[in-house]
Length: 266
Length: 267
Image (tube, rainbow over all chains, first blue to last red; front, side):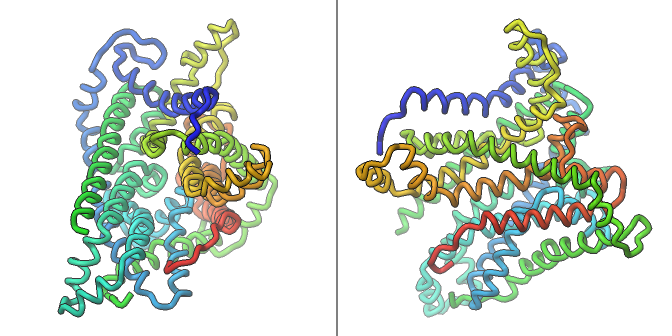
C-alpha cells in the first residue's frame, strides 16, 4: 500500500502541522519582541529572557518544578516497576484484573477530581500543603503510567531466564536487580520519561494541592496569564520548548542506544 | 511467573489504597456533608435543581462537540500519516506539541484570538470589522480541539498501523468502493483506537477548567470549572465533592462504553 500521497492529502497534513505548531512558534516569535504585546513586532530583543533569569522568584519556581519532576518520576518509576512485577506474579487472574483496573483509574480520572480528592486527603491526614503535598501527588499520578509502560516488557520476558538464574544459585534480590530489571529497562525508561512529562505538564492537580508558599511553573503561568499578556511568559515558552525538544531527543537516543546494546547481547 | 517478592509489592499496594481507593471514598463522604460538616443529602438535592442540571448538560454538550471535531480532524490525519514514508518520524512531530505545557498553548491563544491578534488582523485585511473572538464558545471549542488533536491521533494511528493492508486489497478486489471499504473494513477494524481516542478527549473535555477560565472568560462553565469554583473559591467542599461524584460516575460510564476488548495472551 505504498501509494504516494495525493496533493490534496499533503495539503491537509500540512495544514494540520501548521495549526499544531503555529501557536507555539507564535509565542516564541513574540518572546523576542521589544514592544510589550503579542500584536506588533517592534524590534528584536532578549530582554524578556533576561527578565526570566533576573527574577529570583521565577528561578526558584523553575528549580522547584524540575526538582518535583525528577524526584517524582524517579520514585514513581521505582514503585511502579515493583508494582508491575508484583502484578505479574499474582497467580489469581481475577485479583490481577482488579488490581489492573484500580491501576488505570488515576489515568482516566479527570485532573480536577484527582486534585480535589487529594486536597481532601492531605487535609485529613494533616499534610501541610506545599512541596511535600505536590511531590506526593505527582508520584501518585505517575505510578500507573509507569506500570503500564513496564508491564508489557515483563510479560514478554521469557520466564526461563528467571528459572535459570534461580537454578544457578541467584537469590531473589539478584534475580530482580541482575535479570529482571536489565531486561525491562526500556520499559522503565519509557515510564520514567512519561512520568517526567506528566509532572512538568501538570497544572490542575498541582493547583489544588499547592499551598500559598509553593508554586510550580504551570501554576505560575496560569496566574500570569490570568493577569493578561506578559512577554515574560513568552520567554518561558521559548525555554520550555527547547527543554521539551531536548528531552524528546535525549529519550530518542537513550532508547536507540539501549536497543543497540540489547541487540549486541543477543 | 515463579519469581515472587512480597515486600517489594507493598509500596504499590499502599499506593492503591491511599491514592486510588481512599480519595474516591473521601469524595463520596464529603459529598454528604454540608458547610458545617453535618451529615446531609442537601448537596444531591441541589445538584438536581435546574441550575446544576443545565450546567451538567451544557458541559456534556461542549464535550460532545469538542470530541466530534477532534475526531473529525484527527482520523484523516492519522490515516494519511500511516501512508507517509517516514510515518514514525511524522507521528513524533505530531506528538511534540502535546508535550509543550498546556498552559502555554492556552496562553498563546489569548494573543492569537485577541482584539489585536493575527486572526483579527486577517479579518481586518479582508475588510471586515475586527471582533472579540476571545471569551466566546467558539474560542473555547477551538482551543480544546487544538489541545486534544494529538491525543486522538496517537491511538487511531496505532490502530491503523496494526491493520493488515491486504484486507483493503481484498475489499477492493471484491468490488467495494473506497467509501464502502472505509465504512465496512477500515473503520470497524480501527474502532478500538477511536474508542481510546474518545476516552482521552471526552473525559478531560468535561473537566478542563483552565481553558474555560483563560479563553472563555466565565461564559462557559464545565463540570471541572464548577468543581474548582466550589473547592477553591466558595470553599464549599461538600458541593464540589457532589459534582465530583457525578463526574466520576460519568467517567466510569464512558470507560465502560469505550472499553477495549481484551486480547488473548498472558496478560
